[in-house]
Length: 336
Image 1 (tube, helix red, strand yellow):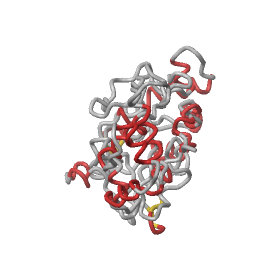
Image 2 (image 1 turned 120 degrees about the vertical axis):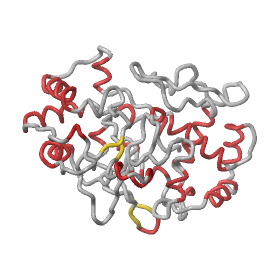
Image 3 (image 1 turned 45 degrees about the vertical axis):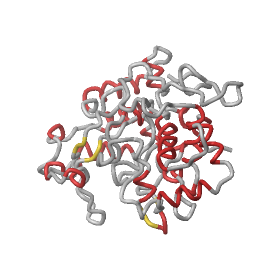
Image 4 (image 1 turned 180 degrees about the vertical axis):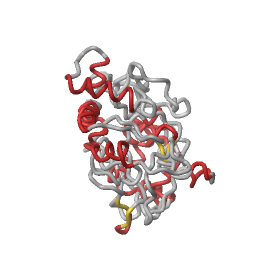
């Protein structure tokens, strides 16, 4: 659970408190969480770096026409996913090829994107910034635009010691911001801490979840970060074969990253291409819609039979994974 009013454990300092230099922050590890994959060892987390990253995250100038900041596809009220859009919108009225996932607990990810094509959080922003159907910009042009702004030299100097603006520092600051998005204060978490109790229907759903879903979505992250074919037929228009695009291995065809179920009630539509508009539709798929194929995950060869009552109970439990404090946290909101 995050400390009230404080991003991290040992320092809620802010610039202007009389101390010189960046003010260190330490990422809090929520109770029960494993060690993060990203440690900030080579990118020391500071209040100034975090604030610079926040400004960059919401700045449309990182895109070619100024209309597509990172936040255009990652909206806080949707747990930093894209609200109600199967595929995100990009430059020149184009659609991206995949559904934008929520951004939280990223420091615990070993690979990013639905296909795991990014293995370092520090370079992840380069993919959407330069993709022609996303932000469609050249990194050098982004740097030129930032250098022409009156505020950025001061912000870069506060975060990194001098006013030099370059792509490495931009990426490090963005990493400090998104890497600090920790979501671990849902009703589920409060129950685990002994501060709340499940209702009868929520408890029934939790019991079902543990027996039918936890092998791929283990607590507390609610993902095992693996890549699996869950029996979705390929969309003939998008023709996305997932992990195989990265590994070029046939055995990885139609395998996509197992998403975290935290905040799942906020991040619809679902699956890599947003084909399901509701959690109920997802449960229907696992119960009766799974398509057989050579790379289908062995755990799903017999589907996951669910009665209507069981689907209801599971839905009630999944709602307890919503972290309202996270989506309303002003620290992650657009700077004024």
